[in-house]
Image 1 (cartoon, rainbow, N blue to C red):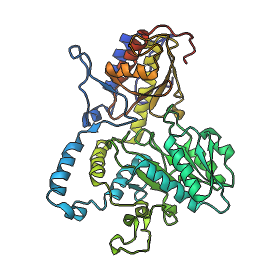
Image 2 (image 1 turned 90 degrees about the horizontal axis):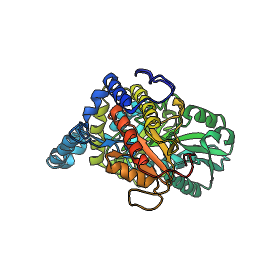
Image 3 (image 1 turned 90 degrees about the vertical axis):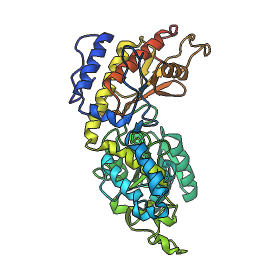
Amino acid sequence: MSETPGFPAGAAGPGPPAEGELTARARELDKADPLAAVRGRFVLDAPPDETSGGAAVYLDGNSLGALPRAVPDRLADVIAREWGELRIRSWSESGWWTAPERIGDKIAPLIGAGPGRVVVGDSTSVNIFKAVVGGVRMAGKGCTEILVDATTFPTDGYIARSAARMTGLAVRPVEPARIADEVTERTALALVNHVDYRTGRLNDLPGITHALHSAGALAVWDLCHSAGALPVGLDAHHVDLAVGCTYKYLNGGPGSPAYLYIRESLQDRFESPLPGWNSHADPFAMDPDHTPADGIARGRVGTPDILSLLALEAALEAWDGVSIEAVRTKSLALTDFFLECVQACVPPGRVRSLTPSAHERRGSQVSLACAPALGSSFGQGEIPVAGQVMDELIRRGVVGDFRPPDVLRFGFTPLYTSFADAERAARVLGEVLRALPEVSSGDGG
């Protein structure tokens, strides 16, 4: 396992350290953590102690981020004063109208984008549709296909196939590592996930983007599992279009609005398939003909979801003074340490990491394939599956999630996840798996 800069090295020796040593190591790592104080910006359970029995360890920020402390008071003010007292005046006096671009500019540094290149609003699915159809409309003549990440989150595939039917193109699923070999002059664009949601594998954004451009195709990236967890570098790598949600590592809240990135040099060519009144050059002219706004505003559609937008804006205050590079350093250290703890605490053959060990191929989650057992002590059937194991972990205070049929997922949000969290999660996982009967084979499932 590679040592991560900024944190103490792993324990030396031929075998894994004892569990007591891991607990002590976790304390050392937390003391050395330059982001440790940021944890206090979130609403979390109190840390476990000898009398409490242990508070919950939250490792599901790759599905829903924890609540930033700035959000409740901000929303209370929005509801009571901006909506309750100012009412419609808040569109101008409270900055509601400019919120999609203003908040986009707050997200932009976290994904390596300059000002005026990100707009916030609508769902991830809607933004994928805008990006794919808009990208096809910008593609060269003679294009006949859209490439789609064959391991993609299902919605991306659904949207791509719908967009292809509307535009008369075909969809061709391709493994991300094969895109450079499979792209042709007939390819309009490729829609690729930056991090695989199931395994935590980090795909090669610079290399794939370059390969697509070399063939004359556009690159459309889904950043849902990378934004807020690692550097993305959209401008530096000349990405054409990108979308992402804000309720995972950006901690914007359940159903918080997504965002759309359009490369600056493409903005005057971008033709949205959803030309709403908010993307009109003169929205209040109520012109029956749509004239798209200049710049990133043409990525808007309808009236913004103000309550969710402003909750997200407050949530992003948790990033004040935090660099995405520091977050990446801690993310790698956390996932390294968790994998080390799993090796030490979990009986051999019960889990197998699906997440690459190489730092350059890893996102900010660890996915473990869970081997089936011969029986269950949890009263949930003869052959417990990963979902039942995760249910037991949650019952014991370790919150992750699972993906059928056998994947346990643990998301590490460096802004608030501690090394003590990682050590406790692995220890409890070991306890749960040791309580099960022996597996029939030791291949890890």
